[in-house]
Structures are given as structure tokens and as C-alpha cells.
Image (cartoon, rainbow, N blue to C red; front, side):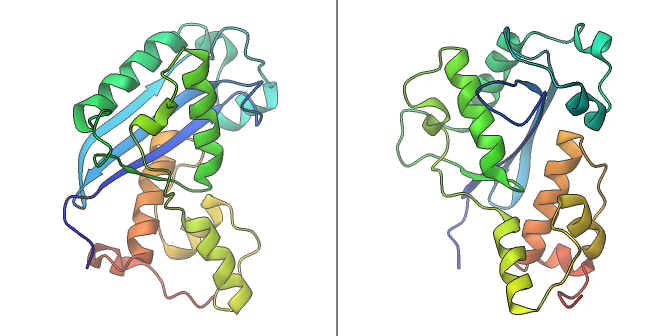
Length: 202
């Protein structure tokens, strides 16, 4: 039985491309889950940081209008707002008070978050002040199921997996993506509310 009141930081970003050192964040969504309950939600669309390259194809995928993008809150203001969100729930000076980072292919998101922290002069520990790096990610398990022959899908994009398990998703919106990922992970962990999901057998 897992200890009560563990913290999970579900996190998803939408970006101007796929290279953390080159491209920037334009939407960040997060759910703070404590003891199995969502206690807070963060969802902010912003401009990419100064100097970030913008791949037009990436904007098309997220349905982002280039002119509308220019009107969003600045990257630095978004960064400060996200820090306030984290510090409401996690003590960065307490080594025992760290969240498990969670997401679908979450390493991608975390790499962008770390580059974002560095760009805005975050402390030397970056987002490690708030999370423990023990990533919770449904994607590797889906691949194991595929190897075992338990699951057979044409691909393992979040949209495909959610469709298979009957989980609602508005793909490429960060808040919808991370909400769906939480439902998927809870289903995998056997949380009762996820009994709506299908059996694993494809």
C-alpha cells in the first residue's frame, strides 16, 4: 500500500519545436495531486522565451495563430507564475517534500522545463527543487504490453492509447493531454474510478 499524501506533479508542455535547447514553451499545464486528489491546476499559454526558434509546423499542430501568440503573457511572467504554483504545495528546502513528476513521454516535457528554468535563471537545482525525478509515465508500460502481446496498437501516441481505453482527449492542448494522462495512469494503477477503461487486450 502506497503511503498517503504522496505528491504527483502531472505536467505537459506545448512547444515551438522538439529541441529543448532551441525551441520554447508556449503552453504549460500541471495538476498537483496530493493523496490521490487534484488540489490545484495550472494552465497558462505564453510567448516563447526571447531567442527561441519557432517552427511553423509546431504551431499548426497546436492550432496556435502566430499573431495571437504575440499577445500572450511573456515567458518570464509565466515562469514566475509557475514557481508560485509549485511553492504553494512543495517546500523547495525540504528534501523529503518533493513530487513525483508524471506525464506521457514525460522526459520530453521535463527537458523543456529544465531548459526553461535555466533560461530564466532558476536556482542550480532547477525544477529538482520541487520534484524527485522518479518519473511516472504510462508510455514505457504500453511498450512492455506490446512486447508481451497484451496490447497491439498501430502506434503509442497519447491520442491512440486514450482512444483505445475510452479516455476523453482534446489532443495537443496541454491541459487536456495531462488530464487524460492522469486518467490513464490511474487506470494502470488500478484506481477504481478507472474501471470505465477497456481491458488491455487489443
